[in-house]
Amino acid sequence: MSINATLIGQIIWFVLFIWFTMKYVWPPLQKAMHARQKQIADGLAAAERGKQELEAAGRRSQDAAQDARKRGAEIISQAEKRAAQIVEEAKLGAKTEGDRMIAGAKAEIDQETFRAKEALRSQVAVLAIVGAEKILRREVDAKAHAELLTAIQAEL
Image 1 (cartoon, one colour):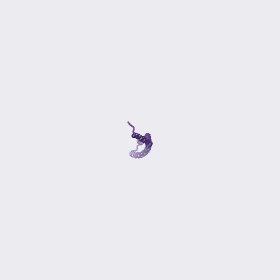
Image 2 (cartoon, helix red, strand yellow):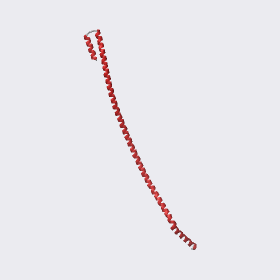
Image 3 (cartoon, helix red, strand yellow):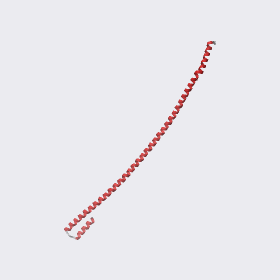
Image 4 (cartoon, helix red, strand yellow):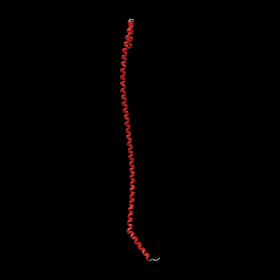
């Protein structure tokens, strides 16, 4: 192998190319690669943060939903209690009103019974007097009349 001027020229040009590349081309490439690496690392970190935030938001939403279900159950329970209380109040009011109406009806029945008895007594008295008049007109026997009047009086 012989070393000649062409090979030495190529070596010189290759060394100059390497030097030029290392001085002017390589630093911007390295800077771009480092920027790209940093961008990718930031993106991965942001993705991880986003994933953690998503999990935290999911837990918060589950907690909020659970709290809402509890609150809804409490509201339903309170509404059922209030409905039962209203029903009991209505029953009590209806019972009171019914008792009042029954008492009024009993008083009215007592009054009507009293009136009927009084009317019946007056009618019986009239009938007794009429019967006594008829008896007296037919025969005048004091003993028989006294017994008859006593019997009528006992019936009244």
